[in-house]
Length: 324
Image 1 (cartoon, one colour):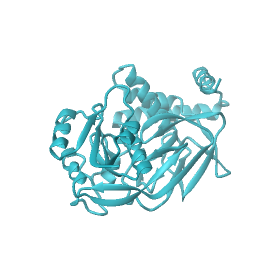
Image 2 (tube, rainbow, N blue to C red):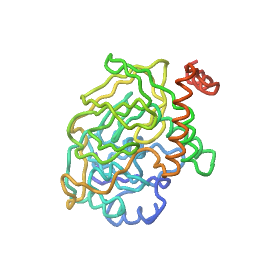
Image 3 (tube, rainbow, N blue to C red):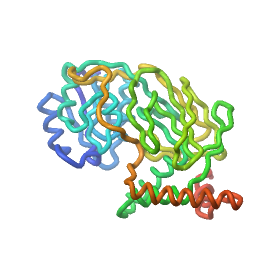
Image 4 (tube, one colour):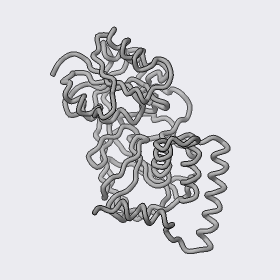
């Protein structure tokens, strides 16, 4: 293993100042080898091939897990440089989300913290895994973004409200009927549709939350080191750290206690409380929330009057998701 540090920069995550080029230049001034990701680049493989003793990634929450997995596999230390739009992991780690250049100090004389990571279907996650309405929201948001449509967030939110769906799941053998299922890497503060901060990243537990309503006002929760989730079908749409994925069923989730060596700048406090309530799914404006709530109420009333039948496009999606 080489001793030099290595930083991957996702230029699609940034949108403000500094830009990817400026951040790369600042990193090189710190003696850090950098690589700006291009089309087709696999960050996990690039991190593994680097042979570096310190692996870092500058990006949003969806960019982090692949490089963290490489660090876990090689025994390297991991550095997070906040460079996305929300940066929830960086917030919970105590980093200044508005100053990615300051995070570079972790590569030189940073303080090591041992933190937990979660694993589902062989993949690492640093924040959470969601199923049901949250996951549907993320998948529809990504679909609209790829098509280049305006107001993608509002469109996704309203589409999810019109087709809320239910999860008929078994969690560790216990039947669950919910519209939202969220598994967090440690405990999240939660307020309505908003995921807040995590007081700890090293408690060695997963937190499972379920809600029966599309717009949840009441949650059931439990904690464990691992969960097994069974659902009908072969695959399920999920969101992992806010990124859309299709996962093979059943799902086996586990906490890897204090498995990751996270380096943070020396001045970062041990147990920070930084920033206000944030979330891993798209933030809804008040107008968007009111529209979605009205759609959800109408759908709830219809479901009480008529038996629930899959919509034609839902049937098509299910058929498409089944393996050949």
